[in-house]
Length: 353
Ligand code: NAD
Ligand code: UD1
Image 1: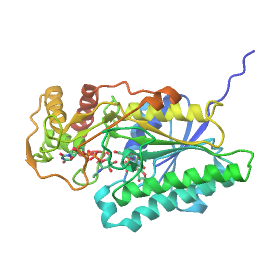
Image 2 (image 1 turned 135 degrees about the vertical axis):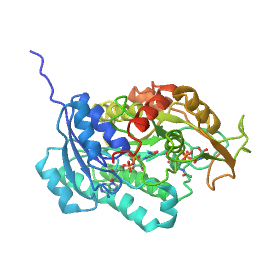
Image 3 (image 1 turned 90 degrees about the vertical axis):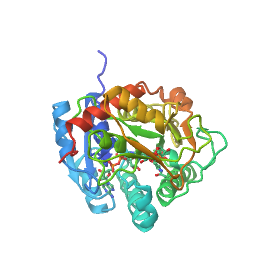
């Protein structure tokens, strides 16, 4: 009789956040056992209540900071974790420029503690939330994994430092000839937007959003007056910046593919590899505003203002490697992203409050 393999238990750091909560839904629906650790610095437990509502299954949640070694060790003692998906981190670029120590301490030191506790527990499979922001400026707007790195702000540098640390850990295992070496996937996200189709979970930014899509959604719902379009003099067809927007549900499905591959012989023991998670297609700021108006029937007021410091004209993914090695590609289109953003925003105008 064929042996039925039990699905693995996944520790999701930052699981109460925007992307983490969507990952919780997809992991549960894919049959994984799951444990969440989050310090709630940028999220609310309400997101996990909604995850339970969508899946019909309870979520095991530990409120703890990943920098708290004793608390983290306790979780690894209590739960038989097989793999970690590491979303926990601070992500606001402007705040990282004003408070670099906070970002390095939270993101870099937090990851050091996590990997120490993982190694001590013998858990060596890790999927890390990296970002397209690790890439340096390039003359080619379609970014491949082998492009040079060159982040321009403390947030981006914290992600690059973590990537370096994780690569070094893999190399050290080879030097030390350890029996169970690390297997690490560095997932470099482009611009995640959208929400679960139920409209129960979505992005709930603190204060005024920094990113384009939540800003547009809050203008459409009447919370904000108008979108400021940061520059219309870029060398792009309509002069506004072009980005690779990816549906958050597609994005988290990439993580499920990654944990499947890490757990197989297809991913070499001791490897630490980056994968772009994007659609491979860019849209301009004005195209995003127009798509929002078309799909929702709402008017989105905007005005053109000066460029935002540090912005690139155009940036989109070459997602071929993720397709070739993880068997993953984004499936949802721009209309899906806009419709699901609107479904979340219009049903939850105050977010989770
Ligand atoms: P989010 O802020 O919604 O989620 C991050 C979660 O981590 C929050 O729930 C927060 O409370 C928690 N957290 C932060 N520091 C912690 C700590 N020290 N200990 C425990 N929990 C902690 O952000 P998100 O959009 O879901 O992003 C998830 C990850 O993806 C982050 O690492 C982010 O840098 C990365 N990323 C996000 C984007 C994006 O556009 N959203 C793009 C690229 C990469
Ligand atoms: C930003 C971050 C990046 C992070 C990414 C995650 C900066 C400089 N970069 O990138 O580190 O990984 O979010 O999602 O903050 N725009 C407007 N008006 C707005 C907001 C944005 O015109 O109110 C424009 C921007 O100039 C850009 C596009 O919309 O052309 C997308 O902006 P945004 O959503 O902030 O994403 P990124 O700039 O790609």
